[in-house]
Image (cartoon, rainbow, N blue to C red):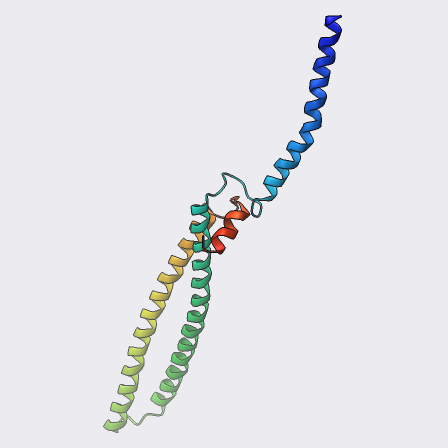
Amino acid sequence: MKRARLPLAASALALSLGAAAPGFAAEAARKEAAFGRGGAGPVLTRDQLRSCLALKVRAAKQDDELVKEQASITALKDDLVRRGDANKAELEALDRSNEEAVAAYNDKATTRDKQIDDYQARVNAFNARVEAGQADHDSYAKGCNNRRYFEDDEAAINKGK
């Protein structure tokens, strides 16, 4: 008789564990739902998430500034091209025997050359900022993108905690 009770006790234990398993599965699903969007790998700590969010905001702000700067640089380039075309037309009609007209043209050409140098310096600075922004995007992609985090941590960070 004792042998009959042992399998019955084991069966009862298995049934009780099986009945509890859905509760564990529900708890695990609830905890998994507390994670931020998708992702894989280790969960970001609150400090890591704070850094990632700050990096994301900084990169977005830099992108906006770079778009505005690019529009400004493009407008400057168009203006320089227009002035160059005007200078070229003026050179063709220039009376080379008139020293004052030649001097005036040379002053315009020198001014435009200086503007071109300033434009090139501005483009070089812009390109350096683009590379720095790309480094931020790469850093975010490597350390933050597609990483899991707790939404509670994100909410706390957004509240300033």
